Image (tube, rainbow, N blue to C red; front, side):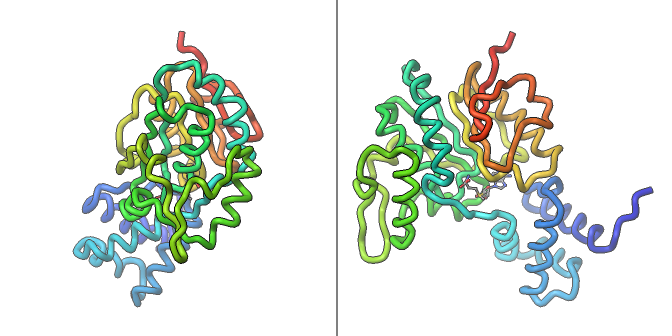
Length: 276
Ligand SMILES: C[S@@+](CC[C@H](N)C(=O)[O-])C[C@H]1O[C@@H](n2cnc3c(N)ncnc32)[C@H](O)[C@@H]1O
């Protein structure tokens, strides 16, 4: 029988309490980084051990909010990994331009930077008008920031560089209004975006997607949950639809592998085969 150490046992109980009380299922998040974040919260809350956090989680929704923030790493950027956007521009946009309606799903969109990057790219490729972008995350705080589309002006230097490296065709400053130390994304870019809460561990498919972008989310899941999520994406895509993952993520181990072909392997872009 596998020996379970006491911390592992306490974490299991804590995650069961979270699932029971709030319906969030973290049982298949991958081990080491989750354990580090839970231990950290334990210290910050002056608890002597992880078990002491269980009653807090069960009875204090504000404490659960802190826990959810810990579990939801929101690091993101506009035009993050510019070479991926370049490929989307070169390889995917010409194909999408043959469709009269285009559906895009950003799963795990965090605070929205990635979503507005895609809106800018689609605008430049003449596709935005006929596109509906669904941008989802399970963290409502992040979604509120995304809906506002207000970011720190400090970051614009890096984002401008990313935009240029991605093959941007205009001046990046055309897409936002600067005020004091922040910038606001142009309203016209938001028009075709629907932000919504969606939990990849338990919620349903988004049907008829031409393109799904889910980057730097699967790395937090164990293989079983990654596989379940990849199947959700497969069922959400139309035949010949595209799936874009993060640079440390792959479908190679998954049972959806045979349903997809590599489109751009380096950029982690896969294309669904025709279902027979
Ligand atoms: C590191 S961010 C990635 C943001 C963006 N995709 C990027 O690559 O720049 C990971 C996001 O995944 C979200 N996430 C984690 N687990 C999730 C789940 N089960 N359902 C939906 N979103 C989840 C987190 O809330 C966080 O916003």
